[in-house]
Length: 296
Image 1 (tube, rainbow, N blue to C red):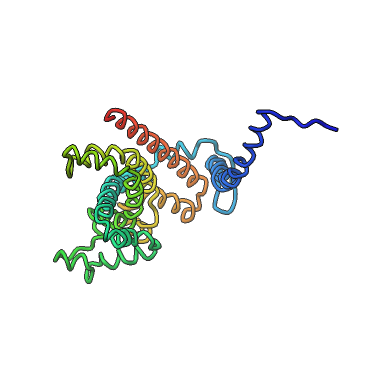
Image 2: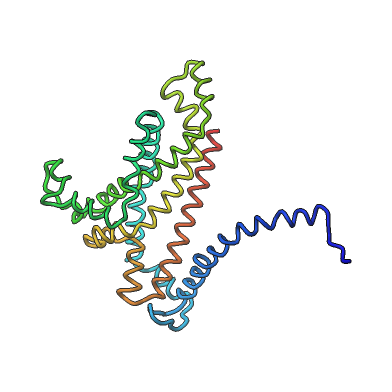
């Protein structure tokens, strides 16, 4: 009769099998829906292709052209501008809303529902509502402010208008992140601080904020990635106008691929943009950790 191996090594291998089975769906999905498409996109970026055929290999010619493309840099600048308008306000408003929900326990359910409800809207519905509110002639915003302005056609106000609509639409997600962090803070810490005479802002400064700092860092990184990936809001509300002042990077990529039928160059835009977003996210995460260590 054959002898089967027994001992600590075989026990560890047996314990690792369920973990491998649990990870297998994620690994498979990562390979099929991220890694393989990313490799295919990178290969296409090295070719002169259209959306329907793969063309000749051109090496890094698309990337060299991209470095000298003013339209790409203008679209990237618009993307950065949108991120500047949304990342910090979304995080700050999300924190404020979470504090309100956490503070007013009797109305917590109503407040949480009211703050999170816009996030459940599809982007088509959100842009329809925002476009109606920002109409020049009969829009609610002009009626309340007593002005007559075409917000989405204004060179100065088009992107801020899209940013405000996006903040209203997505702030509920950040509220939930901060609310989960607040509910994980032990109540005993507040009770001990209250016995020492701490009140109001002192409790927030010495207990709430230090406990929420990692949550805030995560929220900022997630929000930066989400804001850099903007496409639907500007595409549906302004179509990139006026005069391309709201044409963001993904919008330019789609136009290049399907309007100009230059899929190879669009793939180069996608790869360069992915590298930029990854570098910014890593830099922001490192900055948050460094600030956390400095303040600890």
